[in-house]
Length: 350
Image (cartoon, rainbow, N blue to C red):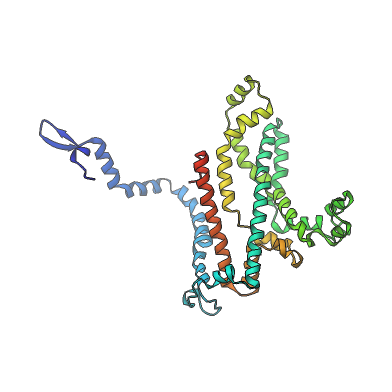
């Protein structure tokens, strides 16, 4: 496509020549001195950019530099040689995990299945809870009562994983500090929901109870803290929207359904996309502290599989390949969820 002088210049009839318009002169000056303007902006707001330095260093050391070790997925594992000097092995680790047919492949697919099931159940039952809590907090008229309830729900998030899992073990496993079995196990046994044998042996020693315990403890730990985003979106709603709904005769439930939820829909979609992005990223710390050899069949996830083979088994190539496949699937889930959200509701992360 050819450009004409008239597209950028103005014809001067008096002189019979073209001259540059003032708007084009400003654009040319901005393009010519772009980096100078950027430098002046950095110097002007140097304090703000200085505050970014720690975050940049964190991303460099904990996100970008570790990518170099991803070469271990395609190299023959050798404890003596660095990754750059190891022999190239192609996709042998991936083939062994995916279609190897041996015990290692069976364990990997079991870990992938458990990872997806735990994440999917956590998404289905855990994602709505912060929204429900935020709606309840919005209906509390006493600021003091709301602050107390919010602090109580936020508190578990600030406990370390070791403390939180220790509390879970004390509540459901045999040998707690209070009695021969956990308080929760004893209560469920008295209600007839579990057999006395299961309560005495410990619910965490039974594969059937690991997933409910993991998901419920996860909701208890993070639901209150995650509700902050939704509560902030709710309090930003204009009071005139509530007044208009009240004039139309809407009660509290109708206001939640027709005013609050549509107003925070964009926030819900964005948070859902980010949650789906981390769907398969289950940290190994909590699972490692809760599971045992009796519950491998339902508790072993990709991160613990990689930790067991990468550190204990000294098979770093296998561990790196497993984690890489897990992260690739997570990336594809983010792209898919973002595309669907953009087409369905015109709200997307990017």
